[in-house]
Image (cartoon, rainbow, N blue to C red; front, side, top):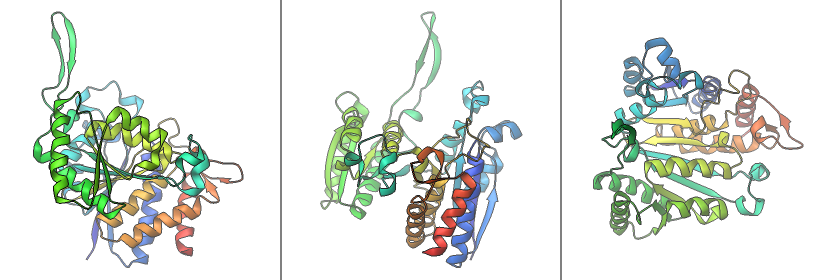
Length: 357
């Protein structure tokens, strides 16, 4: 039985990194005797230029019918002047909402070879292995009312931070179950001393903890968590937090790894999983064969693990990446004594590493 993989390259370097990721998928399909069918559809600014909307109905329907989705990146300066409702980034929010992808998993693991590429001291980051679980379909990004209006003769912008008990409970379960499969430690990040919505968050997470007595739970305010991620990242194992806090903290965690170009992600919860690199569209280097495709390739590993139930494939891809960067580096992770390569060559070298494992 074949599996339908929808690829949405998007904008900027998304078009380059997804090409290399697809090659890895095709190689792994042969290795594991899988039948994969690929469908490519536009999203983001590219889709807006073609159809007048960043999330065309054709793209949405294809994604709903898929077994898994691989997304490149969206956005770019040429679309920043568009009305907020049709900017490329709205496609991501729309897709997450339509597919009910409420749990975003972002691993931040430091590879031994990349300790020197991190901006932090080697002794601080060596051995760091963090999973950030971000609630993805609630919170201030989706809350209503929101907008900009005139009050007392001046413009006022407003957004609403809102979480229901059920929304918190389901993401907390993902946090605890993920922690069980790792080292059994979960840190819930909130701002319960100031925000009532996250006071509820803390209370509900604490209640859910009763169902997972084997997991050690701690709570941390978001400002302290941001500081601790930089000061002593190895104290963390699994982090669960709100949409906005997770957005910020996962990018901070990315720099522990040496480059945001190394961070994959999986968005789960509904029937279809969405996989994408954490990095953006990087328009400044787009089309120049300079992009690092490893985050997208590692996202393919997560796709095999979570959507196709092939944990072994994910582990092989991680090993291949680790082997490859012992010799080859893109510009963002370049180090003395290594061979500098572009996006296409890096993808080719990962496949060569896979062939040798």
